Image 1 (tube, rainbow, N blue to C red):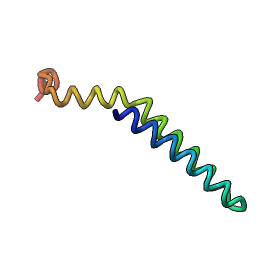
Image 2 (tube, rainbow, N blue to C red; image 1 turned 135 degrees about the horizontal axis):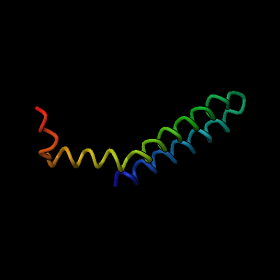
Image 3 (cartoon, one colour; image 1 turned 120 degrees about the vertical axis):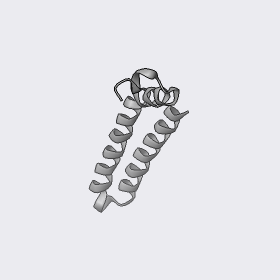
Length: 70
């Protein structure tokens, strides 16, 4: 579910910023930059999401190896 939400937010934000840039053609450049920053930020989150979810699941399990050094 988290993967789907990140995908929807990334694509919706990207399209939203690009549409805002086209509506305000004189000042479109900042909107285009924000669109690509938004898109690649959510792309990075989507790329690392399996690792983040794995770390979260491991923390919930309370694996004994994690506390062995305490």
